[in-house]
Length: 135
Image 1: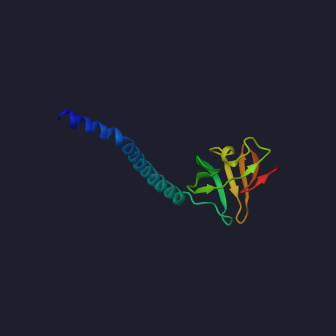
Image 2: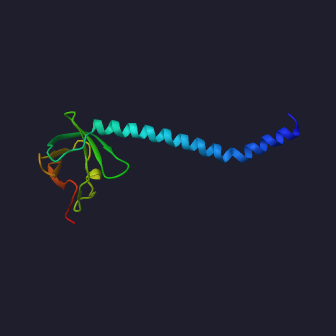
Image 3: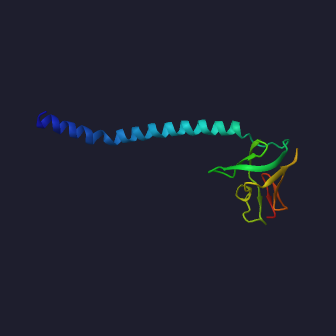
């Protein structure tokens, strides 16, 4: 390769390397987004949202906290898996249900109610799903 061809090759690389990096980044972002969507769909199917008409009663054996939002996924000793929306009670510390519940807590939600109770060490802690208590 002579000097002129070598110079042209270097100029070509200098001119187009930002576009190449941008294209590689875009491809990686797309792949990550697709995988994330697959994971989210799988989790939604595995942990369906608790509905007003649902009742829930049991001891928590597994907790998954979402990175975004105040959503909580729990698995009970009975094998039931549910996603639970946000709830806050200002008199507790921590006040958010997602931060409050722990493995081995027992939980109870009556059918056709937004009441949500956490039982720990013989005490009952009250929450109201999708609401603030004691503001």
